Length: 226
Image: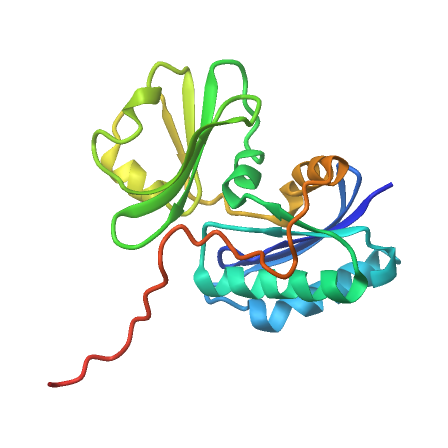
């Protein structure tokens, strides 16, 4: 049995789960308007272990949402995961944020899901997954335009989910598109992906692993007069 601690901090949702094999057995999360990961993440980890009657020594691996997403949120999650893996000498598993989002949508034949996370201005982070949750178009940062995602209109239904769905809804007009801006990344959906990677020993180098930011971080500072 593989017990894995799963950490999701790519958005405002601070989420922690514990899974046994492919099943999530415990979930702790809170979606606050402002990022609260620095205050809540380690508290949630301890509470999750206590409620599952487990200790850190019972863990076989730690999985972490690797992005794309918030620069600060991703760094907090990855730092926590790497610290635990170093101290416990257990593997680190990276889970694509958009893939775990896609798995929250139950798909039928000839349907797609496109997770979309809000980025700057009219941009979103997105990827495209088929009914088997196989990625059929890689993750991109892109500006939402009328022509966006037109290659997928032959599918019966195309679910666009996540914080960027509202931007898409304003621009994309087609009956095949179904929008849900309430769906967010959650550690609840990381179990299947993390277990598969654990079985295949697809582990990250704890010393060198970095989040998948997709775009360079831009610090917004106050303007000063020349």
